[in-house]
Length: 218
Ligand SMILES: [Zn+2]
Ligand SMILES: [Zn+2]
Image (cartoon, rainbow, N blue to C red; front, side):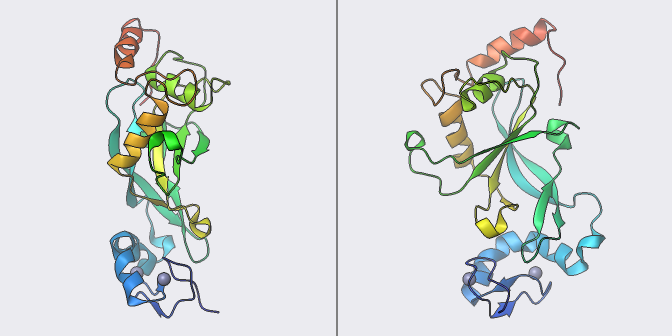
């Protein structure tokens, strides 16, 4: 049996002529996947061993611990050998420091955020016991419905490819994804009982910072 199509997972009939790695069932699917694949194609063509550091990037969202607007960043990753769909190993250190983060996998598809996004967002954060009153921390507590998980540091949100065969691959997050997270976890009346309006809480977090009660991690 031939390797599956990168898009639909049906048996493939052709492969990318450059890397000879990505396989497709049809011209249509090879064309539709090119925007995503073109970033990884040179690395696949050169061999995964050729990677130095984290040579690739994917768009992710950071909800900064100090408050303010969430921002979209280019998060570095490298490809790891994992069958037909190499896994993406994210470099979390620029966002979450050196600590091993807890991973909170959350599928945002509830009716309260409008139409389901149709894909999974993964929320990644560090678990610790500082800065409980930070706005982002309140959002995290809402996510966990107030049960433990005291938290500080940035919140990282990545968008999963969301196919079982490619569970460890990520794709670019969009403003609509960020909006869904804000709506669900950071606005009044959102899921969980500890949620705060994200913007309104900035003032409080600034006050806490001015009090010197917190060593900021970046
Ligand atoms: Zn296909
Ligand atoms: Zn290729």
